Image 1 (tube, rainbow, N blue to C red):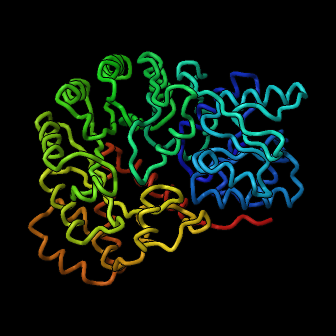
Image 2: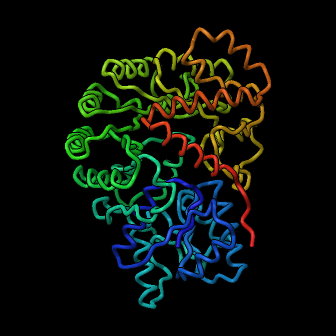
Image 3: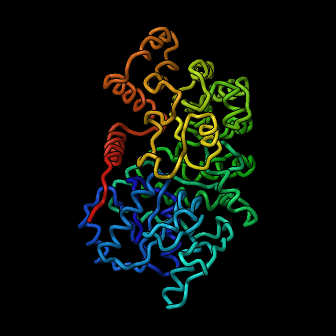
Length: 472
């Protein structure tokens, strides 16, 4: 039995479900966010799991630890397994917690099957590669990264009967990222799995299309979201995949690219195969901020050229933009507005920088006295790029107002004099409401969601941000 604290469907969970069921074991997923305490205990009593799994990102790891502790206090004796991005990167910290019995480090499809096989045969499973065990006498042994086509197919059945299936279909035909952005976890992941096989792996085009067909059968009608970080890094693979996708799936799609990869050949492929929209990481309009602080080495001129290629092909695009970066000035935030204006971004999307432990940008923030320190318990429970900045030295109110009016400033450049006056005001319910309306209109259009579908999506996310402590 696995507990998830978001009300969305995740590919990792579907892959785990597929692998575990294919090996002859049972898998039960619980969306714990909306469950009452007594419901969770009742589900455990009915299912009688051999293991309790908890998947979590940084921030949500605190809710997972709280639930695991409370279950143990209530007399549940099944060993607890923690997995996901946070336990993987920080397994030596997590294994010290009383509520944690073992950590699944990395991509756990095969490791979990090996664990369940051993437990089913009443064999000692301590020391299985891919797990960090509580006992010091069983040191962590890494498991090799799997070839993607060797994995069992995704099984979305674990989300059956939940609102998670009301979202758009999602696939991830490519895993891994070769870049080293200072605010991202990929650099840490690559170091952790160095020597265990290629970090960047592709499904074969045929297998990737099979996964897309599985997704469109169970999710809402609409474009397919291709969630790979580095789609397009292998141009010939990309061409073959989209040709096959167009023939067999025949749906619009939304995908995400590093700006450096958006050459004319890639744009031609997207145009030929019904691309709904593209996401591009601009991050900052200041070349100083991008190169010195974010480790993103491309020029503003290149961003404009990429935008021109997409516009000429009739492909709309969303830009991702970061503000509140350590040492960034207000004039540099306006540079980010201006580069989005020059690019004629269809769907500009802002985020406020969230410092996460042990990333290079957080270390810069501490060194430059924007943060005293960053420990795991300081991370917001619901990590959100819409929260006020956690950094010192910024005028938090001014930054929040710049965030609220960023999209408006990009879409309506003539309003800049008015917006420069508005951002001097204190954040208030009206400015927050304005942002939410503009954001919702752009986000819905960028992903091609229907109005009723999008309203349900918003309601589902509103329920998620209502946090509570689980206590028995």
